[in-house]
Image 1: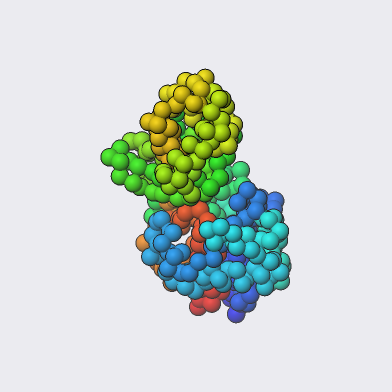
Image 2 (image 1 turned 90 degrees about the vertical axis):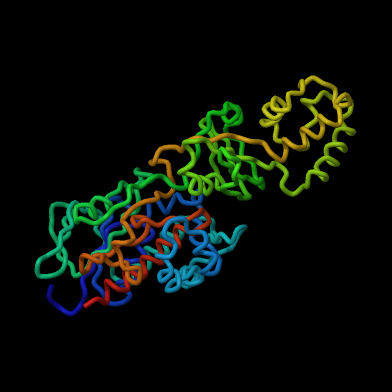
Length: 414
């Protein structure tokens, strides 16, 4: 390669790719961004139910504790571009932010498209050239630099940043391209299992309550030896196949390797109440509805769709008069409120995962730069790397932080 201005290619126009391209351009590189879709940030547009939880307002040590795979690899990245830095970046880009429960950070507009637009403007300011074509080949040059083939045409670059995402949500363009590039170059790739994915249950109660969303519930997961594997608080959704929702997605990342043996998910329907407080509430309600049948006495405590499945688990006849319930039966009802259990034994397909685990083996990369240890001028950023975290903005923060490191090194490397 000739000339003083570094020529950098970024493959993938998602969160990591746009951040990397914009930052490399900001540092003076001539940047070409390749995106196989007709629009940038296609997956980013649907994250957080279209609201885009773009980071988490926590300190660096808390952040690292929420990383599931290879947290130590991310120390340099998160210290170089922290969650506070991400928030400052977007607010300086004209995107007001807000912090919600669990320190989740969203745009004030609640529109993920505004996050994409902020990044698009960043590209535009830096003069990034966007080519909406799929990269079909990536090859090192003997004299240094890289050949990128897209749309039947070759282009030469000093450095390449691979930011193609994982293999989840393939309709958004995340089809594992980065894994294939790495594999063809002889780099180690950890097979990508789904992470942050809905869970499958054989329990027919899930289908009976499909579509029902429970908010502010506690969940705990236990293995076959009743060892606690995970606990969380928040929203849960019943589906025709099992369980979904934010708490379940995080749960899936924590227990994925235990599912084949079955994992019991205990749902605390009233986490704000102690067993004693709950029993007082039941006594009060049952006194108020003393002449009703049991099936009509739980309207104040449960959503309508859950009443019949709940009563079935108590083994109390739904047409029993409330004033005939014994103390032992009432206490049993209270225990069920605190431990409504569902067994899960699998995940939905990889294509339905929000994030994939696995990816380019971190042992292949320099954690200070995200550069390949084997190839000069080759960098990786975002989900294509074997790092992933719980829900709550942590995975997008990983994308942004690794992208900044990769771009900084790619734009400056001699």
